[in-house]
Length: 238
Image (cartoon, rainbow, N blue to C red):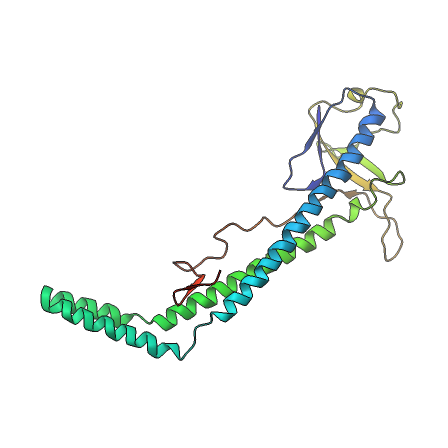
């Protein structure tokens, strides 16, 4: 067996059996590189598009929940009601406990807290959108070398990652065993050769058929404030 690297860097190298003819293994590596990355790209593109649509919906819902200045008076009344309740409690448990409770209510500003949470959630949604758009750009840019890789005209070069030297497949007899050309358990990388610059037409150096994607966001991505930032004024933005 040998291991071959291609496609997104997050993917592990693929294992290939060398108990076959070298020409057959070469074609298998080329075909697998194309089909597996095409499948990955199709699924990832769908995932990114769905995430962006969901974020657009969340952003619209979030905009409708912006705290209003006119709600401040209502919040202040809630504070005053709380203070009155604390005064009743004070008569039962003593002036010291009542004083502490009253000071806690005075220190809180519900409108400011709600506004901070709303702004933080907006920033989080914007950061999520920027991340998904960056992934889309990385995916599009990374697929350039794989374009038409499944055609007979497309040529690949397989290099040993240990010394970065190409495997001399052309120099070997087509009927030679792959195990005589490839070093068992070594890791190899796939390069696309013969590509031209689309703007100048000049030949490009061999292109490593690999690309990097930003990791997917976790469930707590961008949550920097305590509590659930999707809840504003007691209402959910979902």
